[in-house]
Length: 375
View 1 (cartoon, rainbow, N blue to C red):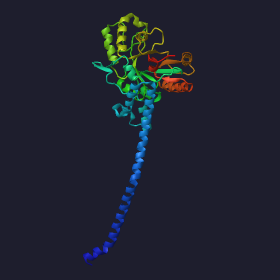
View 2 (view 1 turned 90 degrees about the horizontal axis):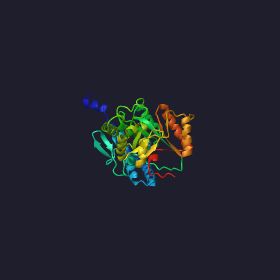
View 3 (view 1 turned 180 degrees about the vertical axis):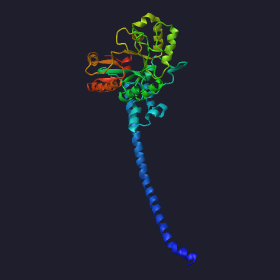
View 4 (view 1 turned 30 degrees about the vertical axis):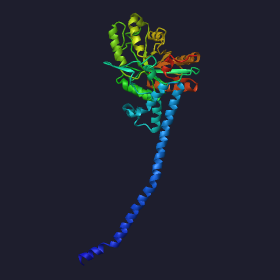
């Protein structure tokens, strides 16, 4: 048998043509399916995209409407920029693992990222807060927007030592409602990052100033604490260091008492500097001998005072019963809390119970605001 006959016996041209037509028919059917399914696929994607856009817009409309009811057009404009938090380096590090619903919820309650231009000055100690005008202050720009209804009982909670413990601080952000205020420790390893994390989750922040009190030296204010037996310049340098630790705090929180009377002129000078910068003041001393609190009141600056410091949250303990009694008689209470794993969980439960009783959880700034109408 010749080579040509051998090839013809192994290869059938007719069979090859039939096979080729079969492959062509398969590809033609596949292209036809993709072509006709194209419109349906695009419609499905557009519908999905539209539903996501409506969800974001509803969150924004709801938030802006709330601000409109408060009559704070500037605050509404500022909070409208909060949606961009997820696009910032801070937002990306926290939001990349969130679902769409969780991301939108976080964006809706996020506070404006700091620092805000015009509300700080650059110094060798960092960015220090400054006021643009008596009505345009760091307190107004960094507080959590809130409409206080004094016809309803309220509870305002400030949790101390925020930023000192990574685990505790993350638990505070994850577990507690955004109405809870955080008191930032200036001795935090990365105070600016903690402020941004808190504000991204809707929590306002107050900066704690460590100051000598009557329990000194047993109660040590730390390496950068403000002291009574030093020069004014010495304390001014420390104050600048403390204020420059972060941006975005609505005011300062401090425990002050009659120990400052021995250096009254010096601390009055520093108080004028602090309140002149447009910061609010949160007095942590629950007694009547507050030094800075009295000065803030005299100067007409935003201020409030804690009614109680909660060491342990025990629903059956005397501390919480005293707070509840104060709410019943005075219409509300401002308290501070030492954080611990148990306290964070207990605070979350306690606030939920109070809410069921009609007690509203409010940020500390809502009580400190000097412009609220108290009936």
